[in-house]
Image (tube, rainbow, N blue to C red; front, side, top):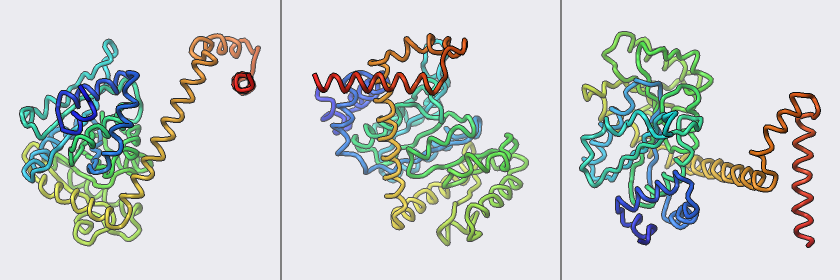
Length: 329
C-alpha cells in the first residue's frame, strides 16, 4: 500500500497507520513525513488548552458540529496522560466525542503524552502534517490540561484557545506569567457556575496589560485587535456559535495582518531546532554511548572525581576528534 497516496486521498486506515508509525518512531516515519510535507500548509490549526475539568473536550465536540455544518473536514488530536504501565492514553477524550464517530468527515485520534512536557505528545507536530496533507481543513489539538507547562501548544497552533472555569483555582495572577500569555482567544466555560462574572472581570483586567490599547472582552470581536473573551456553557450548548465565529474572525484577522505567516515561520524554526536537537542527541548516544555511560559519569561526579562541564566538554572533544579522524581516513 502506497501510504503517501492513500493519506492524500483521505483514506482513514492509511492515516491511522501513518500516525502509528510516527508515534512508534519506526524507521520509515521520517520519509513518510517528508513525502507528505509539500502537501501541507492548508489547515487551520487550533490549540485548545486549559486546566483539567474545564470542559475542553465538550467544547471541541460542539465546535466539530458547527464545522461539519459548514462542510469542513475536521480532525482532532486529543492528547491524554500516559498510563505508567502500558504507556498508552488513559483518559480517552475521544470517548466524549462519540457523536462524530461514524462521520467520515471527522478523524479523532487520542495520543498518549508518554511523559513529554508541554501538555502535548512528542509526535504531535508530525501528526498534524499527516492530517493537513489528508485534507482536513480544521485541526483541533486538545492538550492534557496540566496548567502552566502547556506552553508548547503555541509552537504548534495557529490559534490558541484558553479554556477557564469558575471555581477551579484558575487564579489569574498565578497564570499571568504562563498560560495567560499564550492564549489568543479566552473562553470562560461553565458560565452558569458561581464566580463566572468575577473570572471574566479578572481575565479582562489581565488582558488590559497584555493589550495596551485597552481592548478586551466583547470589544475585541467588533473592533479587531486584542484577544476575544467569551463566556460559554458547552454542556448547555450556549455561546458556542459566538466562539466559532470568534475563531473564524481571529483567523481572518491574523491572516490579513501577516501574523499568521509569522506564526508559521516561528513554528518551522522551533520544529527544525527540535529535529536538530533530537538528531544530535541520537548521534551522540550512538558514538559516545551516553545512555550507558551516564551512570558512570554521575558516579564520578558524586565522588568528586570529575567536574560536570569539564567532563561533558571532554566527551564532546573526543567525539569531534574521532569524527575528524574518520574523515581523514
